[in-house]
Amino acid sequence: MKNEQEIPKEYCPYCGKNLIRILLEKEQGKYNIQYVNEKVGISNWDSIFAWKCPYCSKTWGREL
Ligand SMILES: [Zn+2]
Image (cartoon, rainbow, N blue to C red; front, side, top):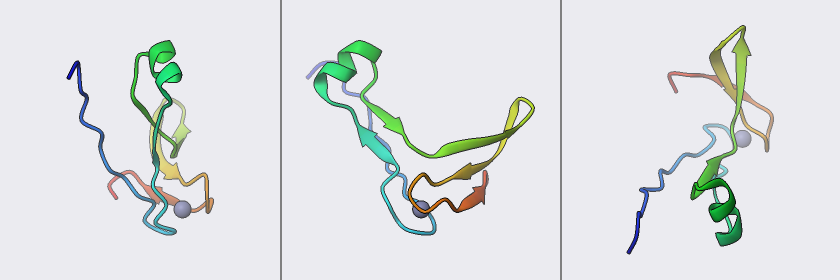
């Protein structure tokens, strides 16, 4: 086992879709990361105050 990162679990609070996408091996090598989080940050200037689900388009506050 080499550099196994812990892959978090995160689901949309509305539609329950898994927001963590595991990258393919060739993508992992290219970006040097194992997964991406597909939720979209909604920012006001430079601070993110909410997230948006790319599947159902609902938004929720950061604390959720
Ligand atoms: Zn959703």
